[in-house]
Length: 398
Image 1 (cartoon, rainbow, N blue to C red):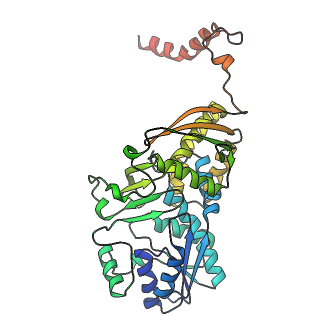
Image 2 (image 1 turned 90 degrees about the horizontal axis):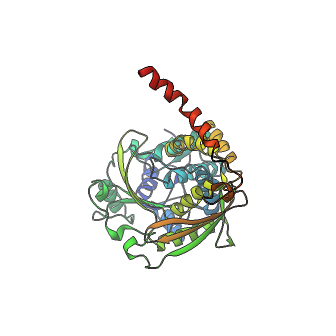
């Protein structure tokens, strides 16, 4: 493949540091390193210096925390997205945003190719490349993991050592991690045996539940049409709000997950995740829906959650079907406004109160005390009509 300039999705970690040098050696053209600040704990000055020292023509770093929260996290949480009942899609939601901005950087820099550090075994290659093709099908795509001979983490470490590239991964601690505002994921290396318990020192965002405070933390989370807008009465921007939820959840040991998931490419993979703020947000959001969302609307919406989540996980964020589903999910959120009070305690996130001007809960109907609005005798006919088909089936059997 002949290219004149490449924009690489760059993090400064092991894979993309090696890829930056490898692209220069193999394509003999300028490489622009594009780094996305999605809320990860990173020394961005050091990332820029490392990229330039490794040979990048230019290092572009873009602050995308607010965009990530507002345009990717919040829409997914309005849909209660969750993959295989557990995973809150932290990496899956970040990739289309990075790829979208990478395409824009390529257009601005006059590049004719884009590259990423995803392996040929994983989901991220699909997420990056589906986005590239959906937004600019004219760009050439270079996926080093599918074409080079550096086919293991160990060989990458050796390549980095040979080229004097400092990397945060060692042979003694070979797992890889991906961090953003929504979560941190850990996989590979010592985690590849699903029987091994992760080392306590691995976790970064969350206190171990057993070490969390002995007194609970109460928090009130306010929503407008499915979006969180305030914590304890204080209005915050999407990015700032999510960072505060991460702090509250992390301090109380909330949001750890250890699972084996089904990758889009067909294999099973073990991943360990920390998603403190997302765990709080999803718990509160679903609880508020119990008093603000019509029963049948909720049933239809819930029937679409698995499909929506699979589309996100598999990389189809910019697909027509995703647009249709998002509009449907958002329509169901029209009445989801109000406040939820939560009790955070040693890894547990428990709703203990909820209120809303849109509430469909009516104490006058639900009370066990005497009321004047519900005739209990009406239930007899309701039961008989619902039992009619059961009676007919029983009679036929006899």
